[in-house]
Length: 627
Image 1 (cartoon, rainbow, N blue to C red):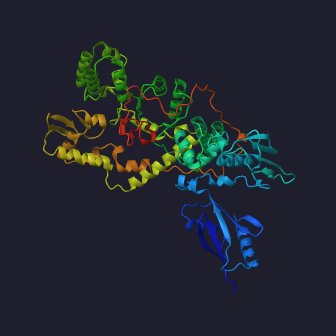
Image 2 (spheres, rainbow, N blue to C red; image 1 turned 90 degrees about the horizontal axis):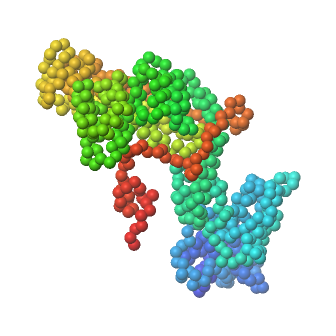
Image 3 (cartoon, one colour; image 1 turned 180 degrees about the vertical axis):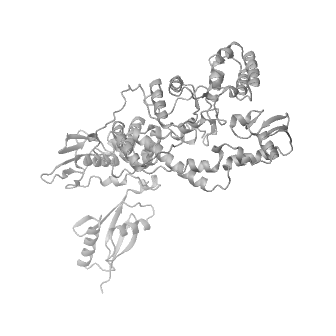
């Protein structure tokens, strides 16, 4: 049996022995050498050997290694003979200056994007140009097109006396795009190498980060710049990074104009996935070009078509002028309450020039007026408010009818809701999705609602109490606080609760002189105390919306998925095609955040990087740090 040859590999003044067995492939050889010399990185050194009359024979693939093994056997180079292999990855001086290991980049595969003559590109000239861009970005050189069309692409080095060039063209009749000529040697030198290039186009950046944008639609251009530098070794401007992010969004979510064409398909698919749907979901949204009177009126007309029952509908809004007109026109008999938070913000703005202490006093007094228990108390507080506020507050109140903001004067049932916080929460909930094309925006809202309804359906299925756990816990808390109070029965269902101060409770009318029961449509602490005294079932005096069964019924239906696998790609052939709104785009970059209301408070956060309290965090911190 023939014994295997021994491969003696020398680097500088050190040699190692490798058994040249039959099953040793090139990858295993490189791995063994990298293991022997710890400072070597795979792919960053060359292997060559010398035979008599044939210096510097390269070994860079399995075929070369087989040839080496055949030569060793042919020339009878035995176990005691030496077959020298030179390994060169730079001089000793270079290794001592740069001691750290070379970083593995995500663009390492671009090293061989252009391999050689006869390389075929399935995507035609477009695929060839992209591969050429990646190849030049990895190697750091610049090139220009000598010819560039759909059938022939010729590129050459940007320097004046170039040697590198490549030419590819379409082969006929096969139609394959193939490299015909390639001079893959550069004479421009290291001085012309650069990490920034015009070949790092927004299209290329968009394709690189399309999957990242799919997972995180709110990815910022500044993060894209950092990742390109860190993972690809490429420098780009902020504008190009921003354009690349926009291109990635269009690749993932579709074009803005094309999205309007897809909307008709989406509506039909949604109806097909949810047949015979007659239920009302807890949210109604519309996408419009602007918030004006015409759009609000249209929205209210659509809402009225769904709210065809006889129950009273109560509106709570921020007093937008178009919304006020629309509600009054479409729902003339519906009570309309103004959001207390917006009113207080408007009041602070109206009282500009007053000292902070007095301003806080006026706003607190205004809040007490809005939550007053009865008309007498409300009128008393209003008189004091006008007296303390002077002309400014009198002028402000003259534009507010009491029935729109004062609880005793309000004709409808608000169930304790004095603000439009639910709408603000929804706006914040879809903040990341707002920048998507319209069809994707609507679909993302559908997905979020579908997931939310499923979670709440599963949560409610576990409840054991008759009343929803949150409100049942509230009743238990009120009972514990009122155990020491005496209750005296006056007549039938009328009771006096001897608290401090004492109040009158009529459990039949579900009212209390403190006003909380009527305001919140939920038993107040005095009502709970009186009901316990009467020995009547507390659940019989609860509004139906507080029952667990009502909650389960509200989320009993599900929103079915809308699969896109059968989506018709020929959207232009559809009978009904929606076009983008004819609106003039304002100058500057489009806004991605809603304009905050006047006086809106911003939650302060503490940055973990600089330690300052403000509105930024570690990811957006720009404060310089002490060295």
